[in-house]
Length: 338
Ligand SMILES: NC(=O)C1=CN([C@@H]2O[C@H](COP(=O)(O)OP(=O)(O)OC[C@H]3O[C@@H](n4cnc5c(N)ncnc54)[C@H](OP(=O)(O)O)[C@@H]3O)[C@@H](O)[C@H]2O)C=CC1
Ligand SMILES: O=C(CO)COP(=O)(O)O
Image 1 (cartoon, rainbow, N blue to C red):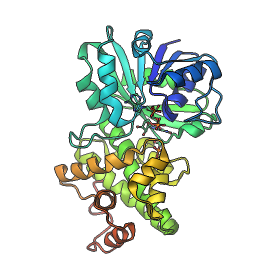
Image 2 (cartoon, protein in one colour):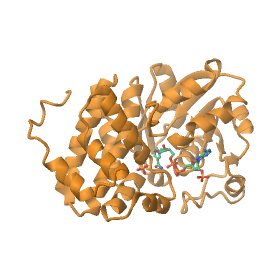
Image 3 (cartoon, rainbow, N blue to C red):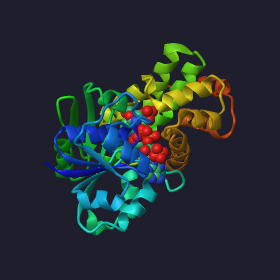
């Protein structure tokens, strides 16, 4: 039995804390809201994020981050990308021993263009970081809490650390594979949200299944092109954290990114969409980061570029689709890396 804490009591942090508690680990869930910690401890629910779910009685919550850190040998960071630095700052003042960090956030920071593991490594004192492992794959919280079979990948250059995370989480409904390809796993996990927004827009425009299949396939091509240029293993992009997560996020009604795209396709404006979602839609900020990365690495990412125009330059989604369809003609495979 390990002593673990999960930082962030949104849908994913809560679902993962449930997996860990159900696996018999001594699990603390940290939330920055006292009322939510009280609800979890007294009513065993987290109504805002998982309204139908009853949490295990051996799962405890705290709003005291010092207590959460002191409790833990392993810390799972499960807040949205834009909150990672703030949470690291809070953790820094309380760290006094080596800890294994696992992150599950799917984003890239705009402007710095850092992946989450890079942000953690630069924000936490090296002497207190055993390793940073990324856990990612096709895994909607809403299905994990129902114990529906789910598969993910734990990646770290140090494979023993990835195996430790595999052992922590693995059970009959939650199967964990390992990988050494941190870059590939992080890039696949972050960029599938961009394509899921586009797939949602396509569905909102009622463009049907041909269009969505095209977005998924050509989306994977541009994710792979960038990811390989950044140092990822080409095969990772056809794995769980690449194609697997791309499929689930572009096709599931649970996906926040797909749902947000769907509303955009129906004509709603971005601020109104984000207001209505009430949960993080990582793909919006990641579209900006991906657009910047495409420029930096000089990689063609036409879907990302059109989505960028829709989100940040007020281009009508229909016009963006027309632009994609009327790009210069070209072979399908020659421009792909693998
Ligand atoms: N949901 C899912 O199925 C999956 C999500 N992910 C990824 O996990 C990450 C978290 O997503 P998810 O759980 O869905 O997000 P949610 O929107 O469901 O929850 C986000 C949580 O983070 C908290 N939070 C936000 N900002 C801060 C902050 N500055 N300090 C402390 N806590 C903060 C929120 O608190 P508050 O309630 O106060 O806003 C909330 O509890 C994302 O990167 C997402 O892509 C990965 C796999 C599956
Ligand atoms: O990453 C996810 C599923 O694997 C969650 O995707 P959404 O944030 O779009 O819901």
